[in-house]
Image (cartoon, rainbow, N blue to C red; front, side):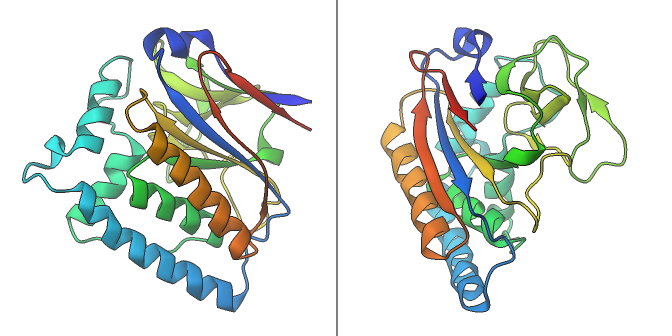
Length: 238
């Protein structure tokens, strides 16, 4: 058995954090034509729905953006990096809507936009050993999406790690190429994060949104859904 473990170092900084998790099996990320069109419509609607989270004239004062900027000030980050949900909402704010990538990615982007929550997904079969969310000691190798060279985590940075290095840096800033979702992905783990307990009900709804659309479109089968907390910090899978 392998585990996803949120380590004590994360809880020390964010004792009220809520980490939503889905384990997904039997994935068909190529998608059938009819389901693809349904997912395109879902993503279009999510781009429109995201605007309800952007009611302030000053972008940084919108609650989801402000909350994650505050959280990012509590740990070491690369200069200028922002949370994944800020990056998505910034695109919507600039009328550069988030477009389709693949069925599974489109569904989790739709959930993220609809609920203004960071959401990421990794290929379970590409993860080496246990997956850990922690404050790093630094120097974990990371090959980011879109990069051509390996970078390394910083001491005091929050990151997702496995036995080979970083899987996602600066908590939810950017995923790596090694564990990214592809058309060949058969099993995956999805993670949605809250730095505190203010929007737990939104997190529950977002996880159910993911489950519903993954199964409704035949993209996969959700085999486990949970929210990890300081009192219950891990799950396992075969």
